[in-house]
Structure formats: structure tokens, C-alpha cells
Length: 78
Image (tube, rainbow, N blue to C red; front, side):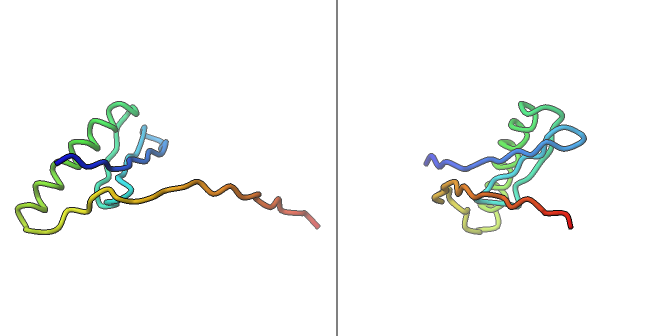
């Protein structure tokens, strides 16, 4: 069965941190975005195997996301 998950990446001092949005426990780091992506996919596979062994339900990627644009107020100095 094929399921889609959403990865988010954040630039950090040592490279990049990646996390699965639908499964926040799946998180890893890499020096490059490509390395981080590979490590995140591996971490996701490993987490799935662990959940199967523990007979826990795997969170499936069935989440709806939409951007919300909002004006950010600028602080006024007094």
C-alpha cells in the first residue's frame, strides 16, 4: 500500500533538520538537504517497521494543509 507523507525541512547551524508532519516523532538531520531527505525516508521506514512489530497503528498521511496569509504587525517604537 502506498501512502504519502509530508516532509518539512528547516535550515539549522549544522545543515538541515527534517521531520514528517503527520508523524512528528520521525525527525532527523543531515549536512545537506539531499542527505537529510534520504535520512528522513530511512527514519520513516524504520519507524514503520517498529510500529508493525509493536502492533501499533501507523499514522497515514491523510491530512489537508492550506496556507494562510496574514499581515504581520510591525512593532512601533515609542
